[in-house]
Amino acid sequence: MTPEKMTAIARQFIAALPHSRELGMELVGIGEGRAEISMPYDPRLVGDPATGVIHGGAVSALMDTCCGAAVMCHPDGNGNTATIDLRIDYMRAAVPGQTIRARAHCYHVTRNVAFLRADALDDDDDHPVATATGAFVFERRKGAGA
Amino acid sequence: MSRPTPEPVQVIKQRRDGALAALVGSVPYIRFMGITFDRRGDELTAILPFREMLIGNPLLPALHGGATAAFLETAAIIELCWSLIWPELESGRLDAAALEKGALPKLPRTVDFTVDYLRSGLPRDAYARARINRSGRRYASVHVEAWQDNRARLFAQGTGHFIMPPVEGAGAGDG
Image (cartoon, rainbow over all chains, first blue to last red; front, side, top):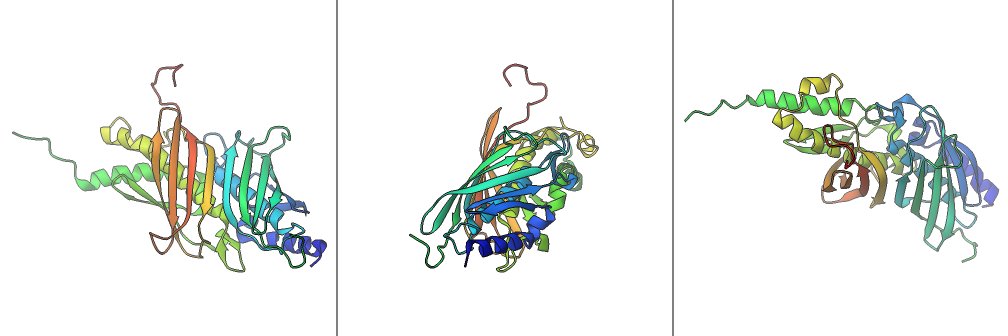
């Protein structure tokens, strides 16, 4: 399968994930082991009614989806993946009303595992809302270099 | 040799359940996820009833890893809040009626949360229990276990660190 075709499949696949769809996630960009996904502000996702800040769980779901998408479009992968481990560090509260964007990339892949880093940003590009590191299942496609 | 008559059990239950419902009901995201809490004395079990919108991988099908993470984090935060509310409620310092009217304590803030995905989440109800490993004045460390059909076969576990809300009435400066 060509990387272009796999990217197209990844795009469709993310659009078909019920939980991601429910959270309003949209693919912004994808390719070469990288992905960017946005999630609009939604009052249903508020975690602290006193401040109107989005719940960390929704940010986790965004990070997990974005990391998964980055693994799926890695040129050496076969498009399958699953989360092994994901750690999220919350730097600051996302500003209520702003869309949150996650950017993930595979910084290393082995025969079986992809290692990921991701950031979540609101309108302030310089100060991430959260960062994530994760390990994901990685399966090499036939013919990919070891 | 007379003791005060113990409160009727129904009154006690109503007060505790009312306080828990007020706490859980105040968070929109918990309602969005459909998470509920079962209470036995002070022990809480979080319940995530299965719904189609929790699916991540429709081919397997499996629960979304993000939904699992959110479920664990919610269980941890409510456990922490409950641990703050419980002694206040039992001593009578906190008024359950006021709590139900929205006089809720501030929520802890998540510093970090790590989820260990042990097996794929099945399209069924999930349960979680949180254990507070350390709770100081400022920081708390909480471990959460989640399972589905078998209590002994966890499908995910998580550990998180939280900043505790300042205790009202505590001296300023050393919080």
